[in-house]
Length: 299
Image 1: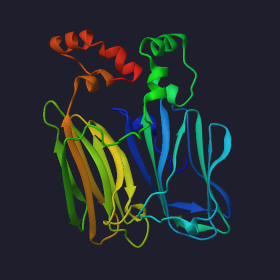
Image 2: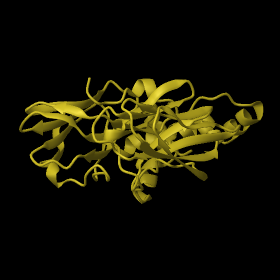
Image 3: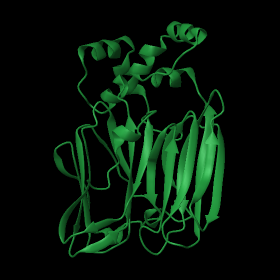
Image 4: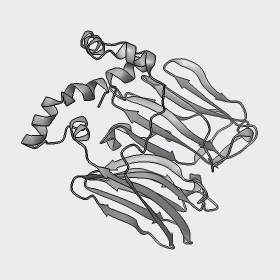
């Protein structure tokens, strides 16, 4: 196993966006550093790539059985760990990331983000994926071909649904809790970004995120995170409790910051995530045809 995220274990309220920040030992030659497969029925978008600026290293992504869909020929020319490369690649079957090194490299710093969607009929049409007979009927019913031909393409906002923002910062010299948020009734809390002062080596300290009974949704080595001048975006939704901790392995002082947002838990949210509805909510959902609209991608 490389540095890929265990999507099936951590995913709870899609769409969500998870960050991998794990240094990798590279051997001379080609190294498979992460691979995503077996994630059906979800659609993954590979993005958020950042690399230690190092000449001589090369990076490629093979996607859905097509080789070298993305290629960065020399990682000496990238933006570095405090920014992200302009890569956004949807995959439906398999995505493999490789780094080629001229010689062995210990604890190479890099990270990537994976945004996970439950495929709606509209999203499948946008990506040119085959529709079932039932999905074709829904596309015709809601006029999706015409809608797509007229709509201006817009990127997915991973912070959609946030109405209030909070920033938490701390300077810690031992393991402890950075923030613990109990989600108010009728709300959702969305972890939105992370950053830290990078230590001088790997495995000095880790930022960990737990939510709603799932531990280590994120487990990030500070050595691979962006500095405090910029924050790495994520989207981790919580409906009960969000907890961010610092796990210190080597003594020192660690400066860390996270931001999260608060928004209303809407009726489409509850339908999308299969949550229990009250009688009134169920009546409104049926009157507004929300179950079908959520499946289609119009709610």
